[in-house]
Image 1 (cartoon, rainbow, N blue to C red):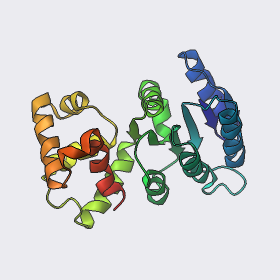
Image 2: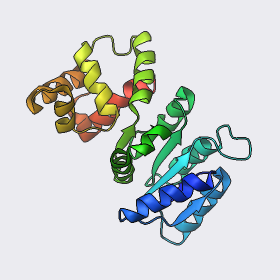
Image 3: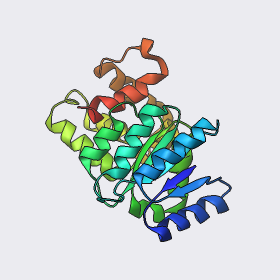
Image 4: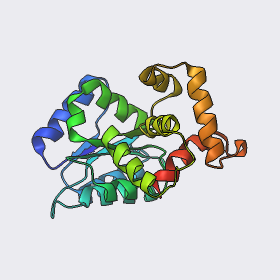
Length: 217
């Protein structure tokens, strides 16, 4: 993995944390331009990283350099996972990052890094092509979508299940969170697919498409 964070202290801390847990950090950079160049150089050597962990705001303007670099990397290297970290929820950046696909993408608040196990699980999930969205991000994006009636046909429980799906949770994890059976979760998800017009022909991508239905609205 490659870590892009302008705070040397945080960058070194993340590197040490992930390395100690058995993951290989091949590079650490401090700005978006360096991130794009580093990943491109590694790709040219046939060593494309599994995942990039990047801060949203980096030099020189500390506005959106990090997320811009992340969006560019997802276009140039579709196989790479991208997990961005932000001080607080920025809907515009989250939506832009998720606009193409929610495969191998994550958006977490920096406070979540303190929850080491959850953070590392999120990094691994994104590296494997999964999704890792901070609950606060999901709540804001889902709330906006409700206003636009995109999910008007869903029941409150189905919206809740969809929100947990967007965080990247498995059916079993959703069942534990809601204290219901796996079968109940499967039924809710089946109803969500039906109400959003996602047919069985969409295959395994229906889960991603269901999430994108409101993230892209």
